[in-house]
Image 1 (cartoon, rainbow, N blue to C red):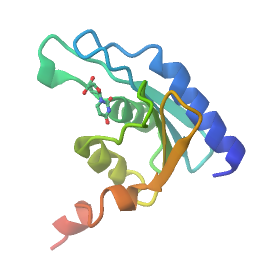
Image 2 (image 1 turned 45 degrees about the horizontal axis):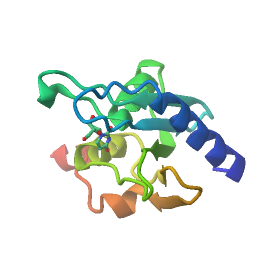
Image 3 (image 1 turned 180 degrees about the horizontal axis):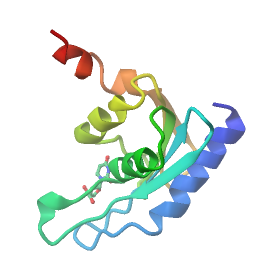
Length: 134
Ligand code: THU
């Protein structure tokens, strides 16, 4: 991912964050994925009165990408309203891993500084379909 692509990805995540539906937590999250063919897909968190049905921003973005035919994610950007960028939840780490275990992860908050890491660091020794092979 080029520095320009990274900035574009963060900007896309920041933009879609404004559409987050979070009446319960008021914690707005935006996510943007870069796929191996250069496309960008976005998602925001969608809460529900039945709290457990809440969908995180990262997983919403994965569903949008897969529905459009994408199968390989090379990077994800996640933006929250915290000064210190929030780390993705465990469920999202697992779902992201399905489509890019080596993807780059860019975490941003309200400030200028971005945290750059990899999914392999956030979810070492991940479970995958490989484990289901006989
Ligand atoms: N949330 C995300 O969208 N992504 C995460 O990785 C962690 C949490 C959302 C779910 C819920 O709507 C709100 O943040 C508070 O947990």
